[in-house]
Length: 132
Image 1 (cartoon, rainbow, N blue to C red):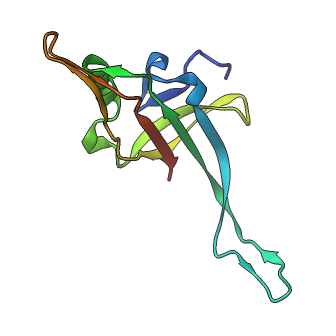
Image 2 (spheres, rainbow, N blue to C red; image 1 turned 45 degrees about the vertical axis):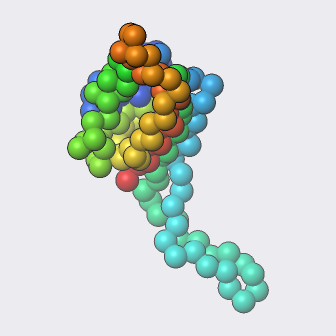
């Protein structure tokens, strides 16, 4: 499938690119996992590579106003972070791939509170997504 202009779909909905600081986006696709690797007495590494690979993605948002945080929370609701379906652009294959992922806890840091406009400006938020 050709690139369609989006990087992530979370539970079937395209995650807005405008919330991503694109230069921070990092995708590590198809990571090889080992079961009980060890080095023998000669220092040689013995690996038991598993057939399932896992992808991880990490990015920061832009600075976010309160309305933007509400938009972000619509994609990563707190009760739904434990396991969600994510479709993502896989640079290894230049195609979209999907899987079951979890989204790590999200830290919120405030830059400014505008009492007159009743708004909050948040620092960029780091989002970490890891495949099961």
